[in-house]
Image 1 (spheres, helix red, strand yellow):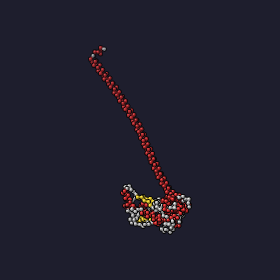
Image 2 (cartoon, helix red, strand yellow):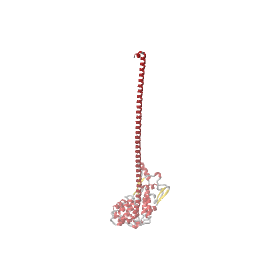
Image 3 (spheres, one colour):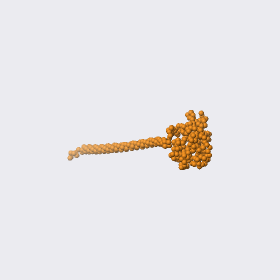
Image 4 (cartoon, helix red, strand yellow):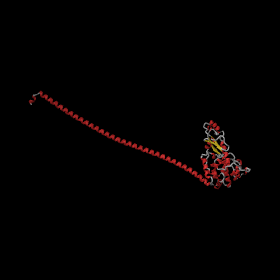
Length: 388
């Protein structure tokens, strides 16, 4: 088996979907009274009210379309994954959506379109204008003051056309659907699942025809062109990857609902439980993240304080050391000055002693010279002594 689109020709794309299950559920919840909502829930499509949190993933759908097998039945959806063919069939569709697994259409009587009471009551009596956009706008604007049963019927028509069989808003709805919602037995036996399934997979597979060439052409024309854009008909949510959270949520909810007569308050309780768990998990993660950030900031601040204290201690020690060193230097300098002063005094005293010795020597020399002179004089005048 080969791929419909070779890997070398894969391209980027952005997908949207005409179906909006979340908006439809919100509008129905707002429009119907509790008793009407309970009555709606007992219809073949009532269980969809518990799937409010489903979300379409264009990225998942795009990856599946790139893996489409080239040769496959028209009424099945085959993809090639990890070398193996994964088949999505009508039975899978019914198992996930919980719609009746039937392809047989009930016999319908020929009726004039204008004879539909639903059309006259809510849609202005002009069937030619019954587009998807017209049905949606009329439902949102409708006042719930008319017959309770008719409002429930209108809600059924609105959900089928805007979710299961959604198309471009300017497209007209099937006229027979106006009568089916007013006949409970025929509505229940009608193959809504089969119509929704065929519309969805055929439109998805047809969306890939000629797209690689179109993408290549536009990429050459526009340098920054990144992806094509598509809008899907039908209800693509059930066909999303079986590993996707959306499909797992559907299957999990289905298992919990199987074999039970689930009432609307039980569905709400279940949904609240899921939402609370998700919110609680999110709050715990945020709390842990905030605590980690606080601890990190506290640790960083503590380290900064310790560094500052250490720097202060180093500066104080340096100042004390400088003071002690300065004091020692002053003492040494004083001591040296004293020693120099003492040495100077010793030198002065020694000088004084030398001067005294010199003076004494000079006196002695003078006296000696005088004595010698006297002796000489005596030698020269020997009689001078005698005369005396």
